[in-house]
Image 1 (tube, rainbow, N blue to C red):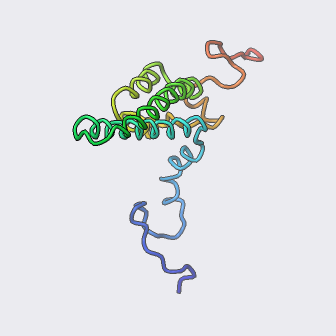
Image 2: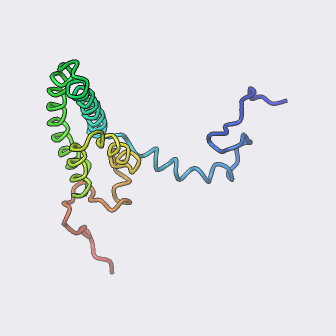
Image 3: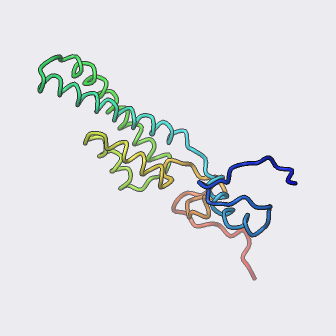
Amino acid sequence: MSTHPAEPAPVAEGTPPAPESTATASAPAPAQAVTADRRRSPIGTVFSVVAFFEAFTWAGLLVGMFLKYVTGTTEFGVFLFGRLHGGAFMVYLVVAIVAAIVLRWKWWVAALAILAAIPPLVTVVLEIWLHRTGRLTRLAPGDRAAEGRATEGRSAGSEPRDPAPAR
């Protein structure tokens, strides 16, 4: 008789229910450790919100232009979403530049972020890609050295100091 309540098998995770052993726990541990040490950056969260809002205002402006120029029913959509999108576009550019600096994006990633604001709805596609590739997260301090990034207390171009030469 089992002491655990009856639970459905976790099919989505791909691990069948089994007693705890080192064999089943050792395989997913490295992936869990890496994702557990990554923390969502506040600027990454702001970038995501602004990117989705910029895309929403783009969509609203497109609908407004359809209503104004194709159906000829109203100009209110262009009036409202034109102003909202103009403001969202400017905020997006500033947030993209700040995120590129804070999150240390390469120049081509920053250029993609800025260029993504020009075609309609591309900021959403870019945000999804940035999120999937981990470019919107902040690494834990211990992971910075493993990723080859500069650690605190060192400038990007300086060599690490050896406190005592080895003999």
